[in-house]
Image 1 (cartoon, rainbow, N blue to C red):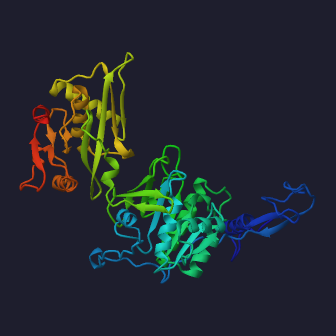
Image 2 (image 1 turned 180 degrees about the horizontal axis):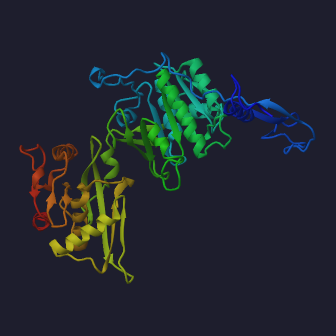
Image 3 (image 1 turned 180 degrees about the vertical axis):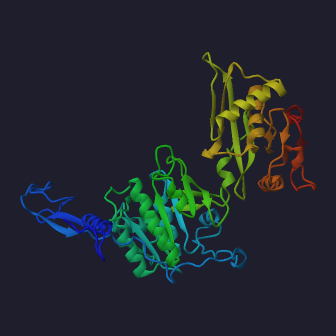
Length: 470
């Protein structure tokens, strides 16, 4: 029996010592290495008898290295110098535009997109450009080093001075980064990387979250820019936990139809720059090439004006883009007319049809209405309302609009046409591309005349109808 008291030993302390010893004791098999919580005659793993031996459990080492300098002190907000992060250009102008001017030391960038869209191609081209002035490392988990070399040869960057590492264990990747000290690291892809600290398979929620957290900490400690390639789900979202997008500094989505040669990179999150910036690329036999005039991609080349076609000036980040909106209104062949919008919100199309019926006197109750944004671009801003309405009216009346006309504006439920942001920038972009007339909200009427374009301001839908074919 244990002693119930004494000068140096109490019952509670004795019990705690025994419990601590029990918690620290494990039994492992000398044959197969399987662990058991208590001793038993037969190993539950391999079935061998009398092979379990007692050992002391060792606490796992910390997964993260401590920050240099010890504990971080608390600073007053006013004493912290607010300086802009230095930008390092990637050598690809369209990618730099989306990133806000280039990469930032210590930043973690996540690039997602459909399979075969060109993620690996773009990053290999960017890393080859970066390798001319800074050290770069390309970590491939989906391909062998020979496959990466073949792609580099096809892209004409085989002589680039960048390192290639075929590895999927995050501990080995981090050790290589600490040893070689590159300035930019590409991980292709984060779903193939795993850590020994977890028993789950690569690509699982726990593995993706843990590996991204470890790589992010290394990037902040060493000032290394890390670019993570992410898989996407069938719905188009980045696969894995949502916390992955919260961990990183920048989230880019690579969009485009695999049957088309044009690709779009859109910034969804950027701690070092503006969001919703747009970069446009064309896929060629020598890789991706930036498009200097993306408006030409989204405009159809009609030999003569056609009904149901209207040109919109939309805004993507800081860049005005001219996009053609096409509408087709036809007699329905079913009991319920169809309402289909491609590249824009379908619910907004139904609202605009109700406004057109109420305030313009034009009904499409027994007709199918199809609206499409040419070129596969997605329009989310309400400035497209007036252009959609004008394209539908042109199709209903089977009358083409005047040549070189652009339209933009938000339409309210009361029939008013509301202003949109940066109206003068939109008009200047249209004038630069040769458009001579514009129908815009009255509040967006420029104070001074813009050379090369005549502006017609309107305040309501019925007023727009009077000036549409005037």
